[in-house]
Length: 119
Image (cartoon, rainbow, N blue to C red):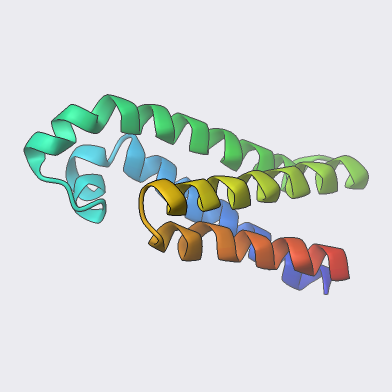
């Protein structure tokens, strides 16, 4: 069960690496298409999206520490913290931006959290 939980956590990590890239280095190209923005609108919101990408990078860092930290208890704490943060951010994003965020971010994070609790 712990392996399945770790696989779900890794999926959440990879989703957020992709989101960081979309919101930062790829925003003017692929990012704006994914978010459905015109070139003009993308130019206006680019600084805010880059900032948002930075925050998503911190979620990636927490989850990555969960995989890399040598102490199992500390690693688990980072993983659970990261997953909780992703779940909350996903709920907020779904409420304020798009319901799709709930399914892309929150659902995988909550599944991972449940699997860790069952493991």
